[in-house]
Length: 359
Image 1: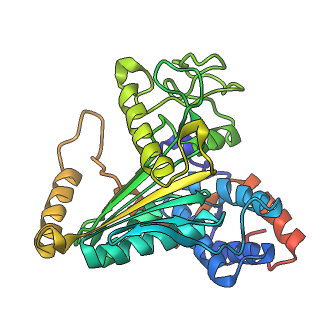
Image 2 (image 1 turned 120 degrees about the vertical axis):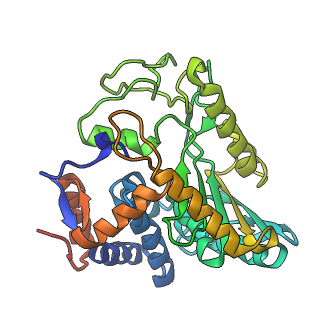
Image 3 (image 1 turned 45 degrees about the vertical axis):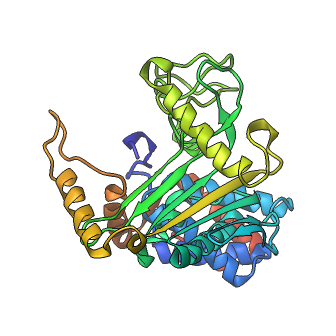
């Protein structure tokens, strides 16, 4: 992430990942989740925090999940089921379950079908927020498979030239196996800036950068300023002159492959909060696995060690910084804003669970 999104080290509270994981599990179980589902949901959140995907970790997402669970908007005991299928594909009704539970279940189904047929494809209807797309995409790596995860994100994106939120932010995650190099793991929304990054900026008291969002009338904001009320997100590219039609087109593609393909309509006509789409490609159905990994390693290394532009130190491919950040955070801990720790302290006290966090 850009430096603007990081908690300054002089105020950050560093927490051991396992202490935070155990705390999150306790919170979920206190809310009524089974131990298995609580551990799975916590794993999704801590994957994001450990890898530096702070927008989708506990800082932003846990309090949203807690509120929705307390208000009965998330089914804590879902009975998800396959409602339509072909040999290599199926659609799952998640029964309103938490996306951090049903998303991984659906990806396991895609992997199982991919192992049998070469490619597995699963759509999910009646779902909810499933966390960082990188997590579910990366589940395929240990099976020598390419994983893809996409979801119909929050309805907050304005079409190019538009002034209404008619498209979701719609992130996609793609994970490709390697041998010795850090695997390629791409995860990004089709908006110029992820929705949760705006929340981070507001928490840190910072404004928007040019080309991220619109004003209340839908006009792109092209100078750094305070984040206004009633803003809309711009597609990747920001404006038509620098390619927003491409981001808009990709966001629409994901809208159609998730919401529409799972039978839930699309855009503002969605019949459920969120829908997902998962793909798993078995490498040896297409090529030799070992040769593929050698070729990917060679390409990733070539990128990592390539010539840089003036003033730049390194070239990064998707997944490299997250791989390095995970190594660091396992040693020094995960940096959280003090406000986040204060929220945790309140919840810990309310639920009467063990306090493992720094005082």
